[in-house]
Length: 212
Ligand code: 0O2
Image (cartoon, rainbow, N blue to C red; front, side):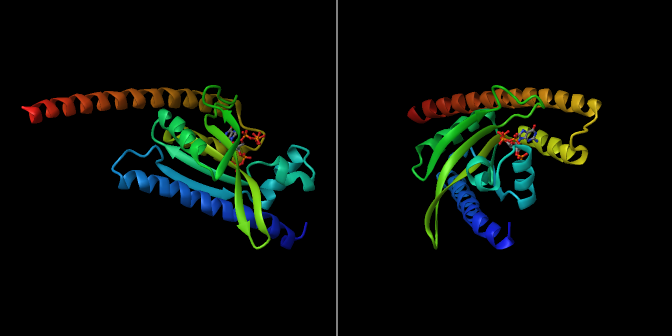
């Protein structure tokens, strides 16, 4: 396919990623300005490279004219949260919006992938406006904790290094590291709820003092 044609295909995805990153960053800002905790810690996005699209199309036996319907992560957004419970809050925020339609949910947290990968994926429909009029495209939103992201980033670079031939002992260590991240996420959640309880009881005591 000619580069000009690729540009025509990918331009709406570039716009979608820019807009979505801006919108999720704005959600963080609104929370901060309102003085409330933001379930979103960090947002980033990318458009899949042409070589990565072609590699996925080949692997999944997808014809070139089916790329846009069958490859759902040409536009990819990653939302990083501090705590596992924040992930549900982010999904609720997205559900309530009328500029994003959830088409599919993939819960790799309740049931992790065989590699140990954990993350919550949403495939959304999103309309962008171009000089040719409106166009609905698909985008993949990956929502995960800082811990899940740490693991996925390291594992992804090792996958890239070893391709299909990751040594068994490295796979096993990654699998152990994935279990450690589950424990870390649980520990952080319980530390957090203790902090919240302590803050609430402090506030209650302060209210009683103020009433007197
Ligand atoms: P990128 O941009 O390099 O991250 P698949 O058949 O798994 O390739 P599918 O079925 O379309 O893809 O969707 P899936 O599995 O729900 O999500 C695919 C994306 O999730 C991957 O994108 C990764 O970003 C992430 N992912 C899925 N499994 C793993 C895993 O075992 N380890 C890591 N680190 N990430 C994973 P791509 O296509 O790899 O592209």
